Amino acid sequence: MKHMENRYGGKLHFGMIGLGTMGRNLLLNLADHGYSVAGYDKNPEQVQRLEKEKANDQVHGFTTLDAFLDALQSPRVVMMLVPAGPIVDAVIADLAPHLAKGDILIDGGNSKFTDTDRRAKMLSDQGLNFIGMGVSGGEEGARRGPSMMPGGNLEAYHHVQTMFEAIAAHVKGDPCVTYIGPGASGHFVKMVHNGIEYALMQLIAETYSLLKNGLNFTNQEMADLFQQWNSGRLGSYLLEITSVIFTVKNPDTGHILVDDISDQAKAKGTGKWTSQFAMDLQVPIPSIDIAVSMRDLSKYGDLRQQLGKQSNSERIWEGDRQALKESLERAFFFNLVLIYSQGMHLLSKASAEYGYRLNLADIARIWRGGCIIRSHFLDTIYTAYLRDPDLEHLVLDPVIQNMLEEGLDAARTVTAQAVTSGFPVPVMATTLNYYLSLASSRLPTNLIQAQRDFFGAHTYELTGKEGVFHTEWPEID
Ligand code: 6PG
Image (tube, rainbow, N blue to C red; front, top):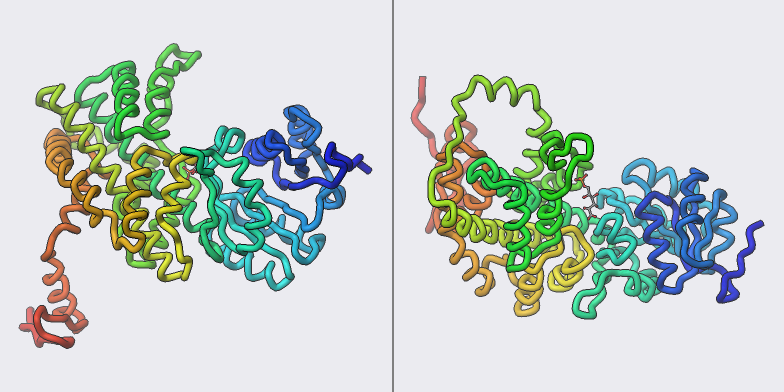
């Protein structure tokens, strides 16, 4: 049996199941902050890797579940970082019979929030506390400070709060972790984080396409421009890494690596879920929807090749390079504001529907550091919700409304020029249409009402008159 005494003379503070890069790095992060930790993985190579990378005697690796659980202090705090889906259920099935009442089980993966709901109910019936926690920041975040979104049992969260606050990223002295709310709210919020991530990535990709193919920017020029933008109001982790991507070479070809990478993008599903659940809640988030669709469309490589040869899709961008560059910065900002706004709108609706009582200011606050969508603009969102916690939509905040009105012209110009020049800009066009529609006091949907009533007697409502109406429309042959 493994020697269990650590330098605090007691059992270990924290256990991790799943020692992939994320799990291992989070344990090492905890150990850096003085916590004694246990790691368990069925794969002995992963356990060896943990042992090899540990910097102090606070880190212990285990290859058997019994020894791992035995090493933990009571109530045990056990986190799973395993691939979302059936593997989480399999781990719970193995683990739950060995846990005691009051133990705390945390799922730190990207689980679907409906699965988290089901698991939380099942585990609470067994007297166990379950926390569904979104963790963002990738490998580096896990090691140096992620953003964490824990939801579920509040008392259980209080038990781990100090630990999580210690290992989280910090912005202006504030840890990027907070209790999100009951049930599966933590995983819901992480899912929306990822939806925003998809749309921002597609926005950056469209901007790249316009710069490279429209304005003939070199990779170095794009690296410089993105770096310059990153130091201003567009400052964000995704822009920062993109500027670096344009400088990294493929050692095999000597090209800049991104030029050699296939254009067919993969996805693990969190973006798709965001769209699916938003549609269930009837919250429009079209910029996220189209970003998900574009990853899917990218996979039809052969079809695109075939059609590309047949279609008259000549692409010529005309206009003053400097002026377009400036318009692009403004259009980018307009899009960025509306992408976050759609995500926050979904959170506010979900909060009401699912009883999450989300504190949107706090969510913006903990996204300012550690996570993939961290950006300067989150500070503006944070202060908007501090000003008015019940804000129906960010576009109604006076500061944000000014920003949007100030960027609207540029968004129109860039989108129109891109489209007339033959460049697809699906997120930019969708975001602009979203804003224009949202700012329309009358939409053409009255006609849709009439059509529904014509072919299906679905009835319609009238402006200025209460009730539901049906018309006997003329017969057609
Ligand atoms: C994060 C990321 C992460 C996600 C990857 C891949 O916040 O650290 O969102 O959780 O798994 O970004 O997502 P896709 O494979 O769906 O692009």
